[in-house]
Image 1 (cartoon, rainbow, N blue to C red):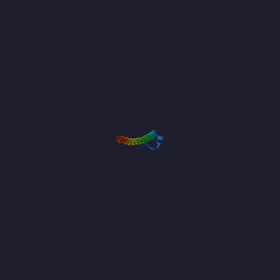
Image 2: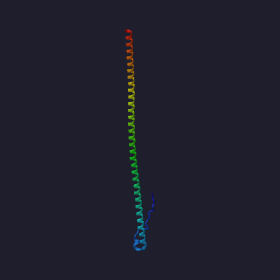
Image 3: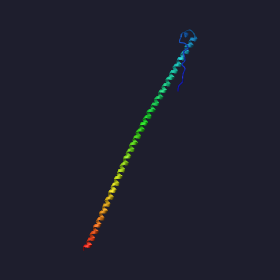
Image 4: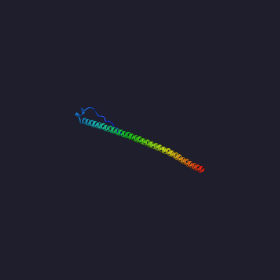
Length: 137
C-alpha cells in the first residue's frame, strides 16, 4: 500500500515580513503548516516502512515455521522408512523361520520314511526267518 504525497514548498524563507505586516504573519503561519504537513508525511512513511518491516518479519517467521514443518515431515518419513525396514527384517526372519520349518519337515519326512523302510526290512527279516524256520524243520 503506497500513497504518494506531494511535498509542499514554503511560500518564502524569510520571516522578516511577519514583523512588518499581517501578510508576513500569514506566510509564516502557512510555512509552519507546510512544515507540520511534511513532518506528518515523513511520520506516515516511517509507519509504512515499519509496517513493511513487520510484514517481512512475519513472512520470515512463516518461512521458518514451514522449514521446521518440512524438517518434521522429513523426520516422520525417515521414521516410517525405519519402521518399514524393520517390518522387512521381521518378514525376512519369518521367511527364514518358515524355510527352516520346511527343511525340518522334510528331514522328519525322510526320517519317517527311513523308519518305515527299517520297519519293512524288519518285517522282511522276520518273514525270512519264519520261512527259514518252516523249511528247516
